[in-house]
Length: 168
Image 1: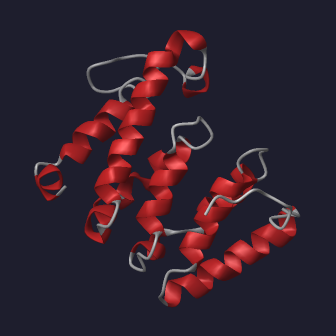
Image 2 (image 1 turned 45 degrees about the vertical axis):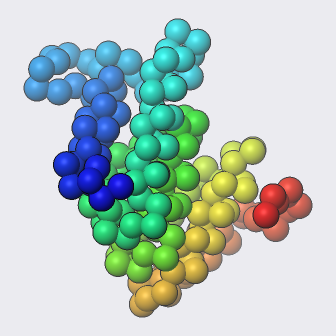
């Protein structure tokens, strides 16, 4: 894990994730594939590549607050990929889990997007787990985040207390 971090393998994986969706200096014009098209059957290989890349990043983040901080600049990019079944929420959950320093980068817009995604059927458990993980972190910034989460849940009417099956 440390060797992969030291050789900046995460940057290669991030470039791999950006390449099909965002024009680069080598590609002029619109993106090769719109991110909204990635769940179509003809883009199955691309979707699988994105899932694998996010799982790889999650493996690098697990147990490493330092590496999570190295990825903090990519959080807005990760947030753009939520809702496309890439398992981004699993990566973000591990990044924020117990990481009080990273909590400083959580803003109201991010919390709003998480709550919006939690309202989609079959997403409640995953996003609720994320919200619980960021709220269990120690630190002053958590109080600010707790207030934002509570406000957003009450204003959107999200019912996180509906019965859901939880596998411990």
